[in-house]
Length: 263
Image 1: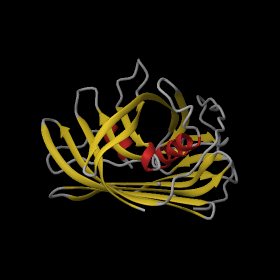
Image 2: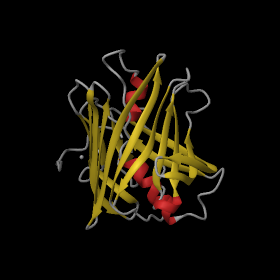
Image 3: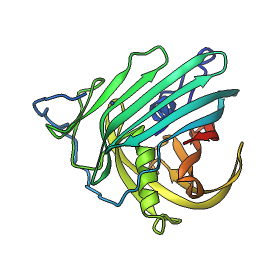
């Protein structure tokens, strides 16, 4: 969960940035493919969850990329009903139009969100599909031959934010500073374990006024110069994300701040 944007007409996008932006889903019957030789089954972590109500969230986007100041907007639709969920996201930049689309849909099980398909469509590229094959218990990708075991609790890059929110809503007393929350997350080509750490409570300025928020950080491992993700969740507003910020090692960033919420 979670989309941002780049101004492609001015500069080619950073690959790492786009991978995390797409901000998700086809029933198939397959013979289980061989697992990647270097794949180690990830731990199964089951937690209590409490899904937030359906809502539409509109974000204003500001970014600094290669010395350029860029503005845009993102629209996220979150829907849950009858034991199913769907989240879609669309990102636009000024003078360019639609840059990114992502969607995730699936069911809700004892682990929380259980994605079926994650679709990622980037500017001027064909869509990619990540499939959570419940029949063969594998995660597969249209853009790579990798596969991973489906053990329970796995997320995609659009559902992960909403799973994090659902866990926080069900465990507010444990969602405290320095607590760590692990999830196994699939993207367009592969999957990996993500670690979120609660930083603490902060006041965030939005178009609707100041909001008391819980700051959560996903930082790359110490030996990895990847992108950092900061998320601010609002307990007073169903724990919806009021701000997200992606920061590159060189200091470039993309930030989206909630400016309209419709339930």
